[in-house]
Length: 186
Image (cartoon, rainbow, N blue to C red; front, side, top):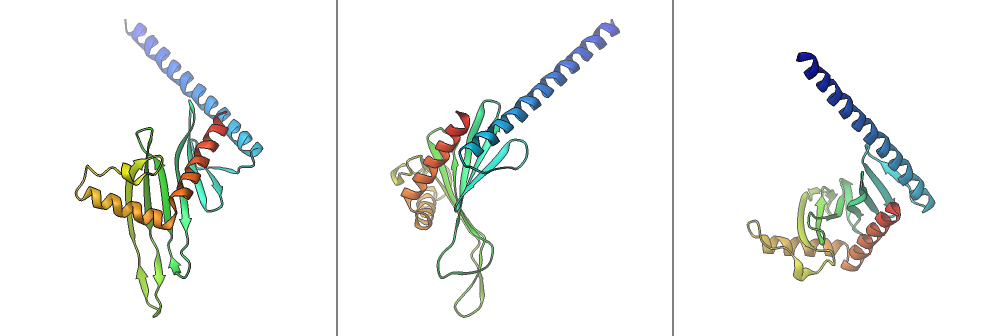
């Protein structure tokens, strides 16, 4: 009786091990295919672990997830430099991330800069905010429920983000992110 149970446990462990090894080899092969497709398209891919990779084009860094089903867009970051602002340290990043719902995005900014003011003193500009809207970046589609002062916070975040990067550029970068995803999955 115990031998039968022990035999079944060993078979289950061997089966699980086989599945894990198979997934590992499939993902390794997919990773190689992604690198090859990206190189053919003139894109430089940088992996950060086995499943996450980045493609940088100018001021934009696109982030993707490699899954068994293919490449999924995660987000893109834009490093923003304001003219006339002397930055001692830190940076200002505008991010657009695909939200859980298929046709929604989450836009945000993260300002971790310490700047030098005109009188020579240092000023910390640490702040961040986000908004959720449709993937056309329509202001009318802002999600304005779910937290305290949601409407005003969403509007403020939207205006700040679109003040740093115009809506048309956000749309172009988003379209480019989707095009790269299609290219790598094709």
